[in-house]
Length: 206
Image (tube, rainbow, N blue to C red; front, side, top):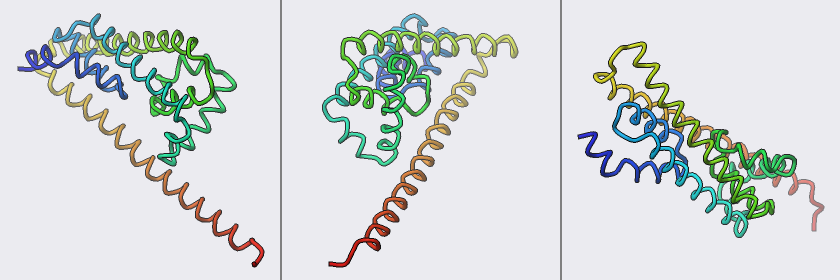
């Protein structure tokens, strides 16, 4: 059943997952490739295509609507401003490496586009970064399966448990980020309200 599902939808799901923000789904695909359900070379290619296409889209949206996009969420606004500072200091390094910094996958390409980074240069370096990310993460997950099998022997009877644990870990990381984002948004909102109140108190009467 699992094998049939992966044959029908596995690579499409991998493309969609990596198009948006797909560390967890790429790790799952790498492990499934070790188990023989998917082809590791195809996993790398599909993950590269999804990641590359998604980040190109966010980059061009950043060039045209960067400030509007970042203003939609307080955390995006704060992270976007910080990202712009980093990009102006070391632009090429950040284009190559932002995928490896958890939580920056969406904000950083928007900020790169907003910074005026050259489209042709981004096209090339973003491709290199996507290729490194897809290869490294898929290979790490594949070898994780090999190490686990070396420790436990045949992991056929444990594979659903391993998949469940990886999914749970991804969910916990996502929930942690959501809670952190909500807390940060409240802090920013309180700071803005305090600033408005202070400005109102200090303004001269009409």
